[in-house]
Each structure stands twice: as structure tokens, then as C-alpha cells.
Length: 289
Length: 345
Image (cartoon, rainbow over all chains, first blue to last red; front, side, top):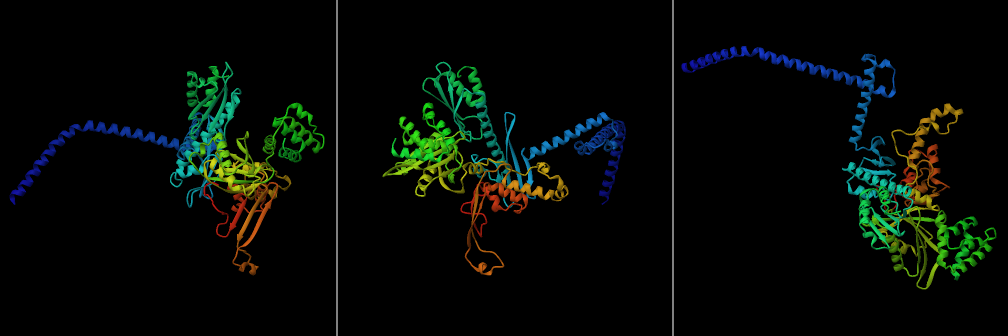
């Protein structure tokens, strides 16, 4: 018993001695430590000030946002007390932040214009079609969400196989994928239709022999300059989700013509480039009239 | 020129109004300009017939050529007779890439396999419609060109429009169509009418649809009589709602000129004041038919003025939604007949 307590006291005493000696050395480190801490304090303060300024700007911007649309009087901006130049800047920043939020939301819903219908039990999607930077027709789909997802109404023409596409992508879980596929088909169709229209407008020397509602086949009659031989060109668009043909086929009375090297080149050009532009190039190289 | 050609020509001259006859003959391109000038269109129809007969004899035209003339006339004036719609179902995999040449060959070969002695003429119109004229004969008789059937089909769509078809020829025609368009079946689409352009526009969705949008057009421009300003204000919102709902159900602007809608009711009689009738177990059969020069516009007007209640009942809005004008209504399923697809009809 005595041994233990003696050990305990002695070890405690030695511990205290160690601490005293180390504290002594620590006292020597204090100025640098203090410097460190001071610097840290400064950094944190400036960060806090920065954040405070950002919050303030955001608050001002939020205040500004409704008024950017309605152009209220300057009375609203009294509590901001900034000079006119930076208020103009703030207005622009407000508009910018509003628009980028809108774009972000639009991107989240897949880029389609959506509107709720039937007290939020349904939605109406607007699918726009675009080709070469020009907006073409817009198609709409009204979809009921409860009790299960189904299409109720739409104005998509019957040669776009909507039923098949709906069966392929499960409507219940993959509505977004379905809409993306439909949009792809519609845009491809609009693109092919527009190309046909441009061919008729820009290339009057080329005769359109056959086409169809879906614009999935195009048969054109070319006239070769020298002997005025007619050349029949068939463009097959078997992939209805694309604007470019999958196969180009030439027919002529002169059997050697389709095998000529420049016509093989023209054929491959027709599969790579939209038909109206390909025709411009082919006519420029004087392969056809 | 044989007898049937002469009779067909006589029929045509009788049927076609004189001014249109001249235009049709020009499009026909079977007569020279000199021959066309020879025919005096100011005379009576009988004289015109005689002159045309003489000119056609000169050209040694046959009944096939006269049939061509009839086809040109019908294509240019399709809103006559009675057109019935059929819908192809269960497309095969290659149905969607069907080409015109393929379809023509297949149709002709299938039909002639099914029936001997049929005269088939197929013509593609500029609006991508494929027109088929069929003169039916059989093993013992030549094709009857006086009672030809006309068929209109747009490739890659499931719809076929038929006019002038006898019931004995119906199964043959439908089978030939199903096979040549690479489908497995065909059914009645329950849409019929005199105006081909109207039923076609309805099914091809070629009219102005109205969908809910965030920015509906303001109704302020619509004929507002200034004198009743105060009364109008009271009703303005309700009226605007009715207009909008009517537009959503039927469409905006010019609507396809459908001329009738028929509802065949097989429902039980319901009237609390008439016990004798209500007691009967069997359904009361009756047919309700709406007729109008343009039934869709009439119904839209009914809905927008409040004569018909809004939101528009599915019984009426199904005409545009499902593209049909014949409905059988039973107690269990209010607007069902045989097959009803949920997504698109």
C-alpha cells in the first residue's frame, strides 16, 4: 500500500515538473502563436465582411427582380442608397440572375415548355421543332398523370408512330426518355420536310419524282450536262430519327455513270450533308445542270 | 370504242358540270388542242356527248382511257358520294418503310389473286395521297366501269378512305389492302362523310388545335358590343372560359366540315317520371343523329355560348379526340364500341 501511493505521488510530481518545464518553453512560442491567431482572425473577419456584402447584394437583387418586370418608380430603391450607375448595374445583374434561374429550371425539365392542367393532375408539353436555326411547327402532348401516365390528346400527325414509341419507352417510369424520343423524331421529320422544301425552292432544275408524307423517301431526277442524260437519285431515310439519308442509290440508262468516281463521291456527299446543300455543291462542280 | 366506253363517257358528261368538264378534259391530255376546240361547250349536254364520242373514236380511246378521265374528275372533286374510313392495325416491321412502287405492285397482285377480271388504276396525287380506282368483274364478266370503287390512302398512315364499295367486294378489298400495306388487320374506323377532305383533315390533325398555354390569347378583340359594356363585364370570365373549353374540345378557326354524328344508344331508359319504361330490363334502342353543314363548328358554338354544358362532355369531344363520328353507347362503357386504344386513336 505504501509503495503504490508513493509511486502515485512521485509520478505525479514528476509529471507536474515536466509540465512546468514545457510550459516554460511554450511561453516562449506565444508571440508567434499570437501572430498566427491574429492573422487568422483578420482572414476570418474579411471573409465575413465579404459574405455580408454578398448577402446584401443578393437581398438588393431580390428586391429588384419583381420591379425589373414592372418598372416601378425609384421610390422602391430608396433603402438601397446606391448611386444611379451601380443601380443600373444591379438591375442588369438582377435580370441576369433571373434569366439564368429560368434557364436552369427549363434545363431541369428537359427543355420542354410544360404547363400543369386539370388541377395538377395532368401536364401539357410543347415540343418545338427547329432546323438550321429556324423554328418550325410546334407540337403538343397532353398527358394525364393519375391514376397512371397516359397520353390524352395531341396534335402529332399519324405518320409519326406515337403508339409504338410510347410502348417502347415505358411511360410510367421513363416519361422524359419518351418525350426525348418523340422530340427527336419530330425534329428529324421537320428537318427532312424543310430540306425538301428548300430543294424545291433552290434547285428548280432538279425534279422531285417521289416523296411521301413522312419525308422518308425522296426520288430526284438530275440532268447530266453534256448529253442531257437523266439520272435518277433515290434517297432512303430509313432511320426516321435522323435528317440525313441512310442510303443513296443512282439509276441511269448509261450504266457506267453511277460507277464514275465523281458520282461515287457525290453519293457519299449526299449521305453526309443535307440534300439541299449537297445539291448546291454538286451543281457548282457542274456534275448536274 | 366499245359499248362500255361509250356508256361511261355518256355517264361522265351527264354527271360533270360543263365548266368542270372543260377543265377535266384539259388535264386529261388525251385529246389534241384542235379536238378540244372542236367540242362546243355552249351546246346541250347531249350535243357535247356526241361530239366527244366522235373525237374519242378518232383517237381510238378505250374504256381504260375514259376511266382515267373519271379518275381525274373524282380526284379534283373528292367531296361527293359517301366515304368510309378504315384503319389498318398491327403493322409489320417493314410497314413504315413501305415505298410507293412496292405498294402498287403488291396491291395489284394481291387483288388480282383474290378476284379475276378486276381493272385497277393507281395514281399518286400531289398531296402524297395514293388514289386507287377499281372496276370489279368476275370469271364470267368484264370489269364494270360504271360502278367503280375509289380508295384513298396516305402511305405511312393507318387510314384508308373508301367510296363506292359493294359489301360483296369488301372482304377482298380489305384483305388486299392489309397485305399490300404490310399490316395484320384492318378495322372500321367509324368515321364517314360526304366530304373526303373533311374526314381526312380530321384524322391527319390538319386543323388548328388549342392546347393549354401559359399565355392564352386575350379575348378582348372578339366582337364586343360597346353598348352592353356592363353586362359583358359580368359575364366576361365565364364566357372566356367557355370559349377556351370549346376551343380545346373542337379546335380553333376553320374546322373540318364533318356533316353528321351518329350515336347508337343501347342504354336503359332513365326517367323517374315514367315508371313503365324505366321498369323494362332491356335497353332502349335508339339512334341520335346530329346533322349540320359543319357539325364541329355547330358543336363548338353550342359549347361556347353555353347551350351545351362545359367542360364539353366526352360524348361530343370524342368526335375530334378519337376522329370518329359513329358511336355505340352502352351502359357500362359510355363512349366505347369495340376496340379502344388508350393513347391514340
